[in-house]
Amino acid sequence: MRAGLMLLCLGYVLSQFFRAFLAVLSGPLENDLGTTPDDLAFASGLWFLVFAAMQIPVGWALDRVGPRRTAAGLLFLGGGGGAAVFAMASAPWHVSLAMALIGVGCSPVLMASFYIFAREFPPARFATLAALMLGVGSVGNLVAAWPMAWAAETMGWRAALWGLAGLSAAVAAGIAALVRDPEAVTGEARGSVLDLLKMRALWPLLPLMFVAYAPSAALRGLWAGPYLRDVFGLDTSQVGQATLVMGVAMIAGTLVYGPLDRLFSTRKWVVFGGNLVAALALLALILAPDRGLLLSVALLAVIGFAGASFPVIVAHGRAFIPAHLAGRGVTLLNLFGIGGVGVAQFVSGPVHAAAATQGALAGHVAIFTLFAGALALGLVLYLFSRDSLD
Image 1 (cartoon, rainbow, N blue to C red):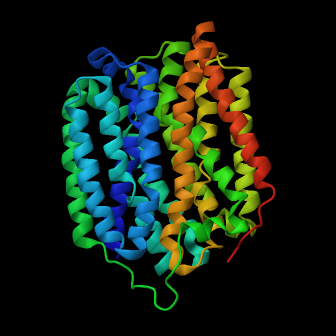
Image 2: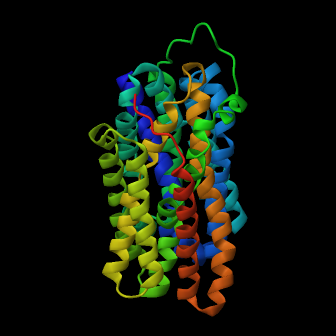
């Protein structure tokens, strides 16, 4: 099981990489393919929406087929195949197609781990284990920053994508060989996503799940790059270094969040307090978007750190989900989390384009305002949730 979880963690490293690497490739892709920030926002949004849409069949497959074959098959076909399509891209729509395929490939790896945690470990340890998987896997977020910028400038982005295609296929083969499926649930085994949606305890959680991850993921995955270039004149390598800081903060936040529910004996208020800090950091960027490079990078880092509440929200919801629906339960929560980022990326492109007619700075302030408003609404609805500790 340990070796299998390590391979799933490596698969999640790839997932984190693929959702974030477009930020540092925006310049090279514009030069080679003629892509615009709006094109990349669409491609990034497509990754998240396809990833989110896959959570329903992935949840069914985890409960019925098991995590080994589900994760290995999709990562091989979607991850390896999508990276190969990206490497051969000659037009902006090819990037979107590749990102959609990669979204399919990345969709099962984290949830396969969460399924194993939910089935094989005590419920009280779920948040800590999930945070550890997220934190270690988020190394991919770091590799997608300055190292990817360096690779694009030295060997070229196409060669780097071919290497990623081979690595994705190799990791998929390792998952197929080493992951062990938990034993099947005996007794009551019926149920569906509709049964989960009828659970009133989940209703106040889902809106915050939809908006909490969007600011950090969308900014780190795409908008930080254009923002830092347009407002502060950074080049590709400098953008990579700045986003690396945000990536480190996201990893640190994930690891810090993990044990806080047990430390403070509450999940609800850990989640609420952290996301309130993220909302305040977004407000600061709205009020002072061009005050200074160090301030802006620091605020992006705060958003990344404070917005890393994903594992605690999942643990909050997981406590209300019966064992025979564990796979569909964690994937439903993930659908809202990842789907929110996808919707945010689709919406953010037109919002940026409309506001940017008043200047580049106005376009980025509009993005910060969009994320801050959505997060504030999610926090208000989350106040009606029932706390959970098990």
